[in-house]
Length: 91
Image 1 (spheres, helix red, strand yellow):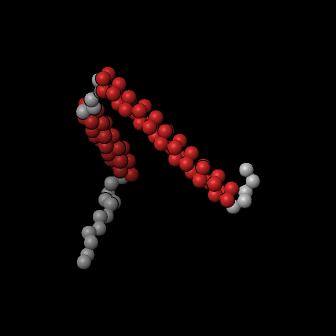
Image 2 (image 1 turned 30 degrees about the vertical axis):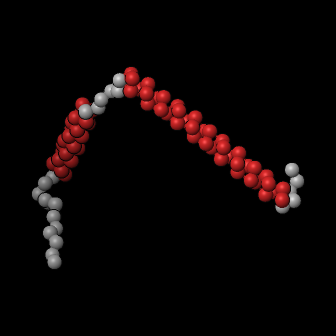
Image 3 (image 1 turned 120 degrees about the vertical axis):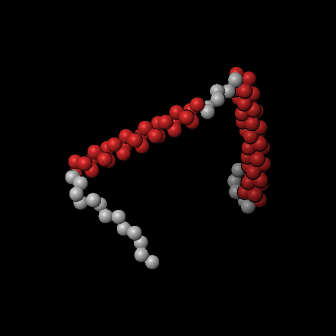
């Protein structure tokens, strides 16, 4: 199956090709910034109550995870101490 091949136009001067590339860059940049502006219009700033409640949830979660990891670390420490003591390691 043959594929189409595009051949650059040999009649165009290098100056015209340069202008074409620059204008294409500016058009793409303009389009990008337009899209960014449209997306930023969709952004909603949270209320003070929403910020307060999510901050509370994060702080509580940090303390819960800290307590969990403290317990797990303590249990593993005791298991390792018993194991090493039973193998004859000095304390």
